[in-house]
Each structure stands twice: as structure tokens, then as C-alpha cells.
View (cartoon, rainbow, N blue to C red):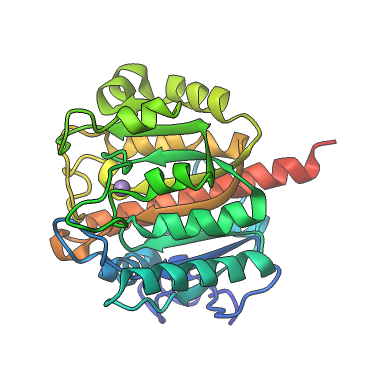
Length: 316
Ligand SMILES: [Mn+2]
């Protein structure tokens, strides 16, 4: 499938792939493969993230690879396709996790990186297992209202509140090179952040991010991450529910969409190797605003990836 000629086909026409990228279910040699992960078996409150990838793709027709502040078009710098969705069973977490890890590992065997569109955040553990098996323990930029380093709940060891605890325990990530930004709101226990902080994770709460602003926070992330291979995980609930109501566990008092997009501009100066945007639940959305924002974040991540790797290719 060729790139759609936008001078011929209106933005709302044709079968909706992510940002109208070519559909290629068996990609090889690509820079970034977009892959949907429709799954919400790890959700603790509002379900519906299984419908996230489809809603994001539908709203993403509007978004171009060229932006006013972006310079060259993203897809003139890097080669991207949409590989469709991972076929994840809705009935068994362990099977779903194994399926996701196998599919993502396969993509990394044949391509440089992926952008996963969720789906609930439990699947980021599968993504980190795949990425770490290729790159070793990675640095992490994690944007979320929640630390997602909880212990087991209701007898479930794996759910959307635990992926980063497992990732630290399994040594998939380097917690000394990990930053969590936007953390806030209600946690089940007062010591909820002790695990992450105890392992050396730098937590920037929503209040601290508000006080620092995006520019100073970008510097903080750069200092922390350095040139290590970096995984970027964005839980859409990091953004205030005024801007992103369509999600499973909304938390008022978060940053605006503008602040989060501004923060993500640090990624182009780092060494990203894996990307995700998770937890869009369109059942609770209004006018598609959450899906549009998830698309914009995905587009920004792809552009930042392009900037990072173009810089690496052209630097002496
Ligand atoms: Mn999360």
C-alpha cells in the first residue's frame, strides 16, 4: 500500500490507518512500525481501552506528518507503516501478555522500533520485555497520573497498575535512568511511591511539573536519561481529564495537553528505541478529543524519533 496522496483524497476518506500510513502487516526494514494493542483485561476501573486503537486511528486522519514547528515532514525523514493490531485474547492476561511480547519482539527483529497504541497499560510490560531483549535495560520516560508500580491487587499480579514494578524487578529498565512525570491523585496506600523512589526512580509529581514547567523538566529528563536507549511510555491519563476524559482512571489536576506536548520535545535530543501511547477508552470520550490528543502525542513521538535518528545519522 502506497502513501495516500493528500491532494487527491480528503482527510476523512479511505480505510483509517494511523495518520493514513501505509498498511503493512508484515513490515521489514522500517524505522518505526505503528502497532495497535486492543486490550483492557488489566483495567481496574473503567473498561473500554480495547477500543482505543480503532478510535485513535479514526481520529488520526486529520493529523499530518508536517507541523508548523517541525521542519521537514516526519515521513520524509523516517519510513513508517501501520502494521494493524496484535490479536490479543480478551479472556486470559497471561496469554495476552505472551502474544504481545512475541509480536513486538518479531517487529523488533525486522525493524528498528515500534509505536504501540493501547490498550491498557499492562501491555507496556510486554513491550519492555521485547525492547530489553534487544537493547538491554533501557532508560524510561513515563508520563502518567499513576506510578504503575503497585503490588498485586485482587489476586492479580499483572494489571495496568503494575507494569513498571515488574519491569524494575525483571531488570528490563534502569531505574536510575527512569523518570515518571505527572504523578498525582488518589493512591490506594500512602506508601504507593516508596517502591519506585526506593529503586532510584525520579518522580516528578504533577505539582512539581507545574512548578518547573516543560523547559526545566526537559533539562531534568536529559540529565537523567543521557544517551541510554530510551523507552517512552505515555498514559493518556497524565493529561488533565478536561483535555482527556476518555480514559480508565481519570485524575483531575494534571497538566494540559500543551504542556505534555512541549515536554515530549526533549525526546529528539535523546536516543528513543520504543514508544507507546496507552489507556485511551473511547467509551468515555467526548467528540473524540482524547483520541485526537493521543494521535497528536503519537505524531509528536514519531517526529521526535525522526529528529533523534536523523541527528545520529548525520553527526560525525
Ligand atoms: Mn498507567
